[in-house]
Every structure is written in C-alpha cells, then in structure tokens.
Amino acid sequence: MSRQRKIALVGNPNAGKSALFNALTGARQKIANYPGVTVERKAGRMVLPSGEPVEMTDLPGSYSLDPTSPDEAVTAKVIRGEFAGESAPDALIVVLDASNLEQHLVFAQEVIALGKPTVVALNMVDLAERDGLVLDPAALEQSLGVKVVPTVAVRRRGLAELTEAVASAELREPVGRINDLSLVERRVAAHAMADAAIISESRQHRLHSQLDKVLLHPWAGPIILFALLFVVFQAVFAWATPFVDALEDGVGLLSQAVVAALPEGLGRDLITEGVLAGVGSVVVFLPQIVILFFFILAMEASGYMARAAFLMDRMMAGVGLSGRSFIPLLSSFACAIPGIMATRSITDPRDRLTTILIAPLMTCSARLPVYAVIIAAFIPQQTVGWGVGLQGLVLFALYVAGILGAMIVALVLRRSLTKGAASGFIMEMPKYQLPNLKDLLIGLWQRAWVFLRRAGTIIFMVTVVLWLLLSFPRAGEGESQVDVSIAGRLAGGLAVVVEPIGFNRDMALALIPAMAAREVAVSSLATTYAVAASDEDEEAQAMALGDQLKARWTLPMALAFLAWFVFAPQCMSTIAVTRRETNGWKWPIFMLAYLFALAYIAAGATYWAAVAAGL
Image 1 (cartoon, rainbow, N blue to C red):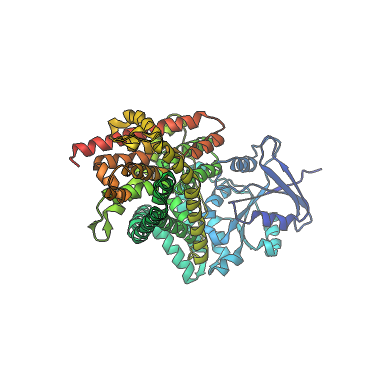
Image 2 (cartoon, helix red, strand yellow):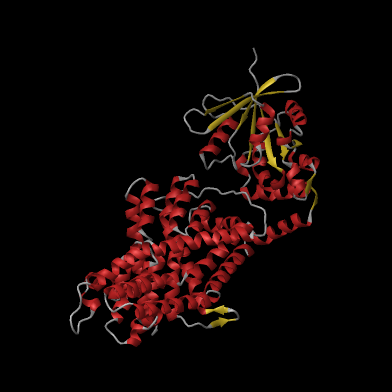
C-alpha cells in the first residue's frame, strides 16, 4: 500500500492559514503536540480533485527558515524533513496576506527556493480590495515561478482551484543555498514583486505606501522619530506651565485656608507640611504626565509606534538586541513593571534577560516630576532658537541620556554576561489611521487616575511617615527641627557617602523614600523644607519648593541630582517583578548594584564637571 501523501501549509503569522486549513479539511482534524516540544501540531485530511486523500498539516506561523523561536524551529525542521518521526511534506502551500503582500513575500521566497512542489494561496484578496488594492495573480505567478491562486478562506472562495494546483504541482530545482540570499536582498526582491503585481490602488493606499517610504527610510526615518520626540518634550514644558502654575496656586490657597481654620499644633502641621506640601508638590505635575501620555497614545493609535520599533531595530542590532526589545523598553517609559513583564514575548532568553536588566534605564513617568521641579527651578525659561525652549531641551537630553546609557549597558552585557548574536526581527505594520478622540480621552483618564491613585496611596503614606520622622523628637529652643529629628540623623549618616558627588543631607534624605516611588523624592524635599521653614520667618514658609531649592542648592548640585535619577534603580516594585521574571535574586541584586554604581559615577562626574566649568 502506498504512503499517504503529505501537504503542509506555511506562511507568516496572521496570513489566514488556520482559516484556510479549516476550510480545506473541515472536521477531519486532529490536534497534538510535536514530540519533545510544546508546539501544537494540527493535522487533517484533504481530498484532491482525483479523490485521493492527503494529510494536511498547518505549520506554525514563521518569518524565516532560520528560526528565532520554538515555533519557527518546528516549521523549518518539518519542511526540511529533519523532525524526528516526521517525514518531509510532499508539497507546500504558501499562504500570503494580499493586503500585506510585500512583507509576506520575503518568507515565500525562502520556501519556494527549496525546490519542493509549491503553490501560493493569495489569501484575503477581498480585504485587500476593500482597502483599495487590486492585485494581478498572473504577474505574481510569473515573478515567483509557481502557481498563484487567489483565495478567500472564510468564504471558501478559490478552494477548488487551489486543490487542483496542489495536485499538479511539480518538483523544481532548488535555488542554491537559502542563506546565499541576505534578508535585505529578499526584501528588495519582495518590493519589486509586489509593485509588479499591483493593478490599481486607491489614493489612500498609495498615500500610506508613500508615508512608509519616508517614515521607514533608513536615514530620514530616525531623524523624523527623534525630531518628533524633541517636540514632545518641548510640549511637556511649554503646554503644561499654565496648568502647573494654577495647581501650585491652588495648593497654596488650600494650605493658607487650613492654617486659618485650624489652631497651631501637630494636626495642622501634618496637613500643611506633610500632606499638602508633600503630596501637593507631586500632584501639580499631573498636566505634564497627561501631555506626555497624549503623544504616546496618539502615536500608538495612529500606527506610528510599530514603525518606530522597526526603525530602532538597526540601532538595537548594533548593541546585540533586536527590535523585539523595543516594545518592552518603550513600555518602560510609562513604567518599568509592565515593560519587564512584556519581555515574555522575546523568545531568545539572553535577549530577554538583557532587556529586563536595562529596562529601568528608560525614563519612567515617575521620574518626570523630579526632572520637572529641578529643571523649572534651575534652568531659565528661555529659548535657544526659534521655538526651542531651553527647559524642554534639557528634559529631552535627560531622556536621551537614559536611552544611550541603556544601549551602552546592553552592548557590554551582550559581550559578557549575556553573550550572543542578535536575533532577527520582522513585524506586521498596522495601517495608518487617525486616533479616535474617545479612545484617547479614556486612555488619558486611566493614566491620570493611576498617577493620582499613587499620589493618594503610596506617596501619601510615605510622606506622612517621613513627616513623622522629621517632626520627632521635637527640637528645643534654638535648635533646628530637621537636625534633631530621626530622619535628619539617618540622612546625616548617608550624607557622608554621597557628599563627594555634591549631595547635601536634604538630597540624601530624598533618596531613601524615593525607592518606594520615584515621585516621593519631590514630596520628600517639599516636606523637609516645609518642616525646616517652620523654624524660620513667614516669608520662608511661603516660599514654593522651586524657590526653596534655589535658595539651598547650587546649579552643580541640581545637575548632579538629575544625573543620579537618570541611572538610579527604580522603585522596589520593579525589583520584585525582576525577581519574579528571572526566578531568583541573582539578577535583581546585580541590577541594583550596577544601577547604583552608574548613578553614583554619573552624579559625581556631572557635579565636578559643572564645578570645574564655573557653573
């Protein structure tokens, strides 16, 4: 009895393979795992026009025959007949997404070059036509050298023609070794094939293609990306200033009302020096948080963020990573916790570990209040060119410093502790679209609420505890309350360690509670100076936090404080998530050690360079 022939469905993820597999096999399916791996094996029975039954296998979605994931490894081994207990398929059906043809043709070339009997299913042609793209299967067939059949799997269109093409597919000569063609060469060929297959396209589809030519250009693309980020950080200061000033005035009026309504004593001091001075000093930066997330959400909703990840792939490859790491690192700009959790999508364990270890160097939103209060206090509100504010420029430089620091650390790690070559990176590009205003508003509200909830819980509790430590024991006549307090004495011990890098006792004190949440550094300074001002005259008590900082710090000290927060470890929750994701304390401890060392060196170098420059 002759062996039953085998047919395999292959293609990129999201090409519609599963829908086509279901349409061709119906209920005649069985699902199991490939032996020795957790990758799912889907097999079914398809009947050719002659009545011959053949076994059909739906192989896992793949971008390349040079595997970078367990799914791709299984696909490559099955196609080549290298999988234990699995004979090689007798024919292949390559499934392409007609609306994303150029990307899918990159992998199709690899498969066709193997020389096996191959048929191309040009799937989802109805969706492509709906989007204004009409293709010529005959032109594509001529370019690829194999039969191309238009299909709409979910509507069972083209199935008869496809099975006929499979039955008549013949062996071809293999086209040399697959690795002889580089990824770049296959992409160039795919672009030419896709262009030749286009009969007509709508103005909108043409516009999207033209946008990609500019935004994904290897030189113009990164320039546009960094220019856009520069505009974002300019807007964070320029747009937020009136709202920040209004909130500061509101907190000041509320504090005055409490002073007028309550008798002098610890209760009033707790509200004015602890809650309002501490928590209020953080809440006033809500407008800057909202503006930052407005741009981030808008870029995600428009489809540009995925393109930014693609652009960053070249830079990431230079330090041993791939564009796969960009999305988790981008998430870390909001908070390192979801960023670290998002590394689960990175299949290479060394890539994933490296990404986890550098995620805290991305400037999370919790650092923004710290940056904002120091910049507003010490950097003049002036322009350094047409429409370029100095404060926004400094903020942009701090974010860039964190990114560059992360890239340098990644390069060192990939050449030492996590040594290995960069993995490949291919991703689907979403369509361009205008962001939905309702979705933007919902997203902004969610992030604003998270920020306010932190202010009302973690920051509130830490601030109250800090106020208690600053308020007891009570100072005697002629003594400074901060000097005699428990917190003041603890900070005095730490100040010995950080004095060489330009930090005073108050700055040292701010570093301790900041490990709970980075914003607490601001509320810590505000509470400390509110308590200290209680020993002074009314004019000192009425001074805003920025004025207090200018009166007590020098510019080199302020710049050193900023440099510290660029590199210092993030909150303890980040360390806890790192421990969970790495299954132990080895890497979290390493992360803490190297980040504290970087922060100390950067702050010291900044301070002494500023002093030497006469600032």
